[in-house]
Amino acid sequence: MLAATVSSGVVVLMGAVFLACAVEMVEALTIVFAVGHTRGWRSAFEGVAVALVALTALVAVFGPALIHVPLTWLRLIVGGVLLIFGMQWLRKAILRSSGLKAMHDEDAIYKETVAELENAAPATNRDRIAFVMAFKGVFLEGLEVVITVLTLGTSAHRLGLAAITAGVALVLVAIIGAIVAKQLSSVPENAMKMGVGILLVTYGTFWVGEGLKVRWPGNDTFLLAFVGIYAVVCWVLVSVIKPKSPSSPVKVDA
Amino acid sequence: MNDRPPLIVRLIKGFGMFWWDFLVGDTPELFVAALVIIGAVALLSQTWHANTVAVITLPVLAITALTVSVRRASNAAKRK
Image (cartoon, rainbow over all chains, first blue to last red; front, side, top):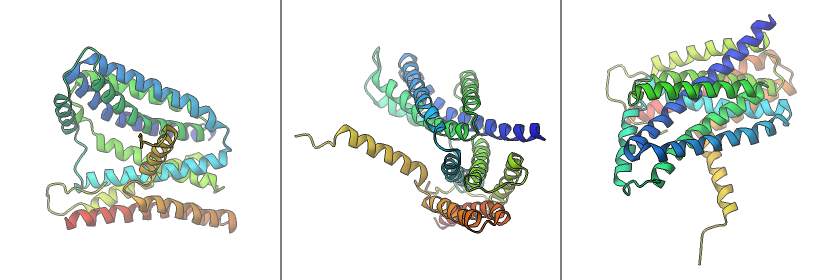
């Protein structure tokens, strides 16, 4: 029973961190590829390296600091943040799955970034534009990963495991990305986003309850019930709002 | 004369803007819903000690908030 309780919590935690990290990495990698191919790899890699150092520093500074916050308050605040963040992800993924919002198109983003870079000043040995673009792409996408790792990791008292999982996702996506190069658009990004959204809302609901002293039946095992419930809700919502006649996606704000 | 605000002001403003975009952004209804959910469950769990009702209410309110937000966006998209 204890093993089942521990493993269900760990599985959901690792799944949420891995998927969130992988999705954000795909987006960051698209920008880095565009920068590298257009302006040269040296400055692109420098931008990536500095962004990774900055993100690691954020985890190193805020991770230990968060451990000193009382667990009840930490879980309530983190639960609230994850609930909002997860619902935002799910909303977007549901609208995309139903065809009411255009899919996130990595090819289009790649072309846009390349066009922007080609119009910029010509590349030199130390290319400031390439450095800044690569840094911004990795840092901004990585910030969401850092928040996910810190909030999930500290609240579950498993910051090390969350950080290792994020690291594994980062390396895996980087390797796969390097192999498939410009075919990142074939990654089922929306399905992954839907998965992350479900896991974030699951943890958000669970920890808001824990922070408010709600006693969940079966303790951590109830996380799996939430995953199932929210997955069914998403499937129902996609089916209900899907337009009857196929048409081109309409742009939805947000 | 430099009209730019001091670095510390810009940093605080940037930090605030980041969290505003992150939590509120284009879906203020979800932010408000989360506050309502926390308030309602706090009342149920801590004031009235109704644990079973809180266990049911929390996910039901989250699902309702998500449904309302998705419905609003889908109706807006279909009107366009």
